Image (cartoon, rainbow, N blue to C red; front, side, top):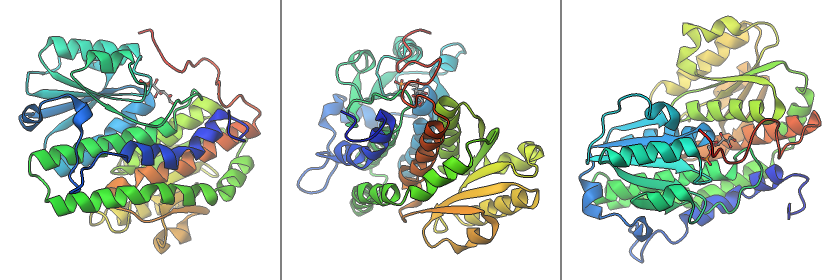
Length: 369
Ligand code: F6R
C-alpha cells in the first residue's frame, strides 16, 4: 500500500504529479472553456462577489496564501486569507457579496468548520475546496470544488497541498472567465502551463538524490530558516512547517523583505537558510531583491541553500547549494518549489530515525477546537 516506498509520506510526495493531474482533469469543455459544474453555485452569484475570504489552518492556510496572489492578479477581487480560529473570534466584515473559500484536506477540521458556519450565519456564500468526498465542511457549504489527490495517510500534508493550490488556480481562472477579466486565450495559456506541471514535478522527484544527501548532512542542525517572497513566501512557511512537524527542528519561515526588520539578527556563522527564489521572469526587481537577500545572509556567515528556476545563474555565487526546478509561469512556481522542501524534511526526519508518518503530538484531522 506504500507503493514500494518506506513511508506513506514518501509515497505521497511521489504521488504529486498524479494529484495535480487528476485535480486538473475534466475541468474544460471541448472548446477549452473551464466548466466547474460540480461547484453547485449560480455563476451569476460568483459574478457579483465583491470580496473573497479564504479560511484554513496549517498547511492549507499556506495554500490559501498562494490562492490570494493568483486570484487577486487574475480576477481583480480583493482576497483576504485568515486562519479559521482567528477569524471567528474577531468581528469580521461579511455580507452576502462575500465569498468564503475554505481549504481543508480532511473536510473535518473543527476550527475551519466553525468558521464556515459562522460566516454562513452572517450571510456569506461558502465554497469548500476539499480532498475528502462527503466530509462535513463541503456538506455544509453552498459550493464545493474537490481536489483529487486521493487519500492522504501521512499526518504531514504534501500532495493535498499541491492539489489545493491547483484547485485554487482553477477557481481563480474560472472567476476570471466568468467576469471577463482575462481573455480566453490567456486562460488557455495558463491552463496549458498547468497541464505541463505534473511532468515538471516528476523531473524534480527524479533529481532529488542531492536533496536527500543534504538532509543527511544537516541532520544535526539545531535551527533552519526559510525565506521567500511573493508566492515563494507561503512556500517558505510550508518548508519550515514540514521541518517542525516531522523532524522536530526549530524552523521559521519569513517573507524575505522582513529580513532587515528583525530576522537578520538571527544570522550567524553556519546558520542554514533556505531561500525560495522568485522567477527571474517575474515582477521587475523582485528576483534581484531576493538575490541581494541571499548575499546579505551569506555575508553574515549563513549556509545558504537556494531553490531557483533552472538557468538562474545569479544565485550560484552566493549559494552553498542550489536546487533547480523547471521553468513555469511565476504564479505557478509553488507547485514546483515546494517539492524539494518536502523531500528535505522527509529525508531529514528519516535520518534522525523518527516516525515520518506519525509525528509526535499531531493528529491527521483536528476535530477539536
Ligand atoms: C501540516 C498539516 C496541518 C493541516 C491542518 C489543516 O502538514 O497537515 O497543518 O494542514 O491541520 O488540516 P485540513 O486541511 O484537513 O483542514
